[in-house]
Image: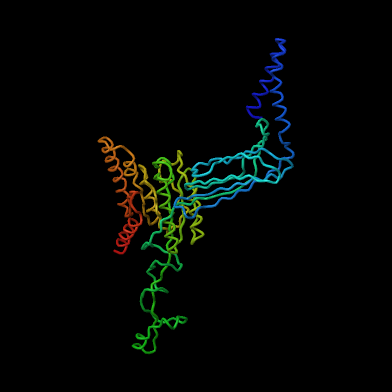
Length: 426
């Protein structure tokens, strides 16, 4: 029963009670039309035992749209024994913006017929799940209602936006013994000439150095090439709410998530092994993996990442490092809060090679705040404090990318890696 039915019953009861108290027959007669109205609604209300509705849902993505856009089609079929007056609706989930259609509809549904609901929505990075459809079957007058939850499951996952970076020139301190694209400074099979050594039984004949063999009778020599291996890369995404600025698709956290997704894609495309750690109230980690399967796991994990608050999230120094192997190249993506620099001596003490990508929160906030002398002074002071914190990190021989999110990231990463590689070669 809904409020309208309850109001009608109370009105009828009130009129009859007033007629009994005052002995006024006119009041009793006034209740007769309302009684007839109620009786008609009860007679026309479908019997719950004869209601049999089936719902079907499909969700399709518009591939031509630059923004993730989806069309939801819901069909309800009356498979019961009588016609029904039906209304059904879908809930509006957080992150959804309806662009066309509507979330609810009304229909008079004869036996064997169907009614449809269609709407289009745009969505931000998240997972959207529908388990059932909320339906209400009532009499034509809308007094007697039966509420139903019809199974109609569907799921859509909106992945982070990827930017296709060109491969980066990686020269990690340690590599993994698997064929890849990174010079390993070891002789073996590869493409770049490494040196010449004495022939060992089993060496391929095509690698014999015939010129040197001709100069040394009774001896054979084999050419060696520099081995090309892969790197072990760990991505650390700072998921703390206290350093996140802005809301929605343009928040600082969203820029950081997109950067993590793009970096994971290029490193995996280069054949490297990549792992992921999202530092939040409950740390989410993905163990190292290769190829498209690992990229899909990373993107699905990033699509559900949300910034979190917690008493234990004051500093990055509490990051669990057991996810990463001891020879990993670790990329930390964090805007940095005060005292976060304590993480980096710890990383260096464990022997990790580290790169920091730090979205600039001061520049990001500056674009949203009014430009007045007080704001400019506060921004300068905050920027000085930030540079002092980052200076403590650079003195550990850790490349630091101070990234203004309005600028492209790839050239900054390439420059930082190239500078670090030159220092490493020296």
